[in-house]
Amino acid sequence: MADERRTVAAPTSCAARPLGRLHLVTDVRRDRDPVAVVRAALSVGVPVVQVRVPDHISDLGAYHLSTIIAELCREAGAICLINDRLHIALAVSADGGHVGGDDLPVAAARRVLGPDAILGATARDPVAARAAVAAGATYLGVGPAFATQTKEGLPDPIGAAGIGAVAAAVTVPVIAIGAVTAVRVPELLAAGAYGVAVVTAVSDAPDPAAAAAELLSALPVAEPA
Image (cartoon, rainbow, N blue to C red; front, side, top):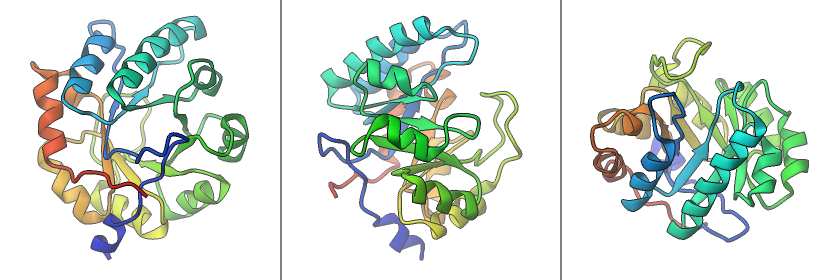
């Protein structure tokens, strides 16, 4: 079953690019430089960047950051997704967006972004996963896979088994998130994950480019649909 799930075709953006298997989520903590980290990651071929900013950052601040990162992604041929704030995704001509449980419902997000955009949704169990896909999600972010302190208020980790339960329930790619490291990637792939999303595995590394390259080497290359 796990091998079958890993052969699921990647959803594509309006530019017909496959969804990459490594997603870098921006880290905007006070002592981080998200643009520098993204630039380093893109230099070694990271295929997807998700711009995620905390609620206390204004739309203007989020827009400025998203504008810079969207342009870097375009120059590198990478996919740029904007988390939560879909109006900013539209404003910067991102490839799509990602919504969580406290954001717009998936069906509403699909109407906002249009039929061709990449749309990710957060899910933790098979029931929620199937509902999100039925409403228009083209991939699912699932986790936290393991215990993490990157984001406050997260539920308990679901482990590789929880990732696998969701992957078995849907036909879209599942992106595992939550304390993912290169060492843990094989376990997550074996459980059925299509790819992984990371924050501190790259942003906290002494050499973000090298850390991103190590993660990429643990993942298969995404094939066009």
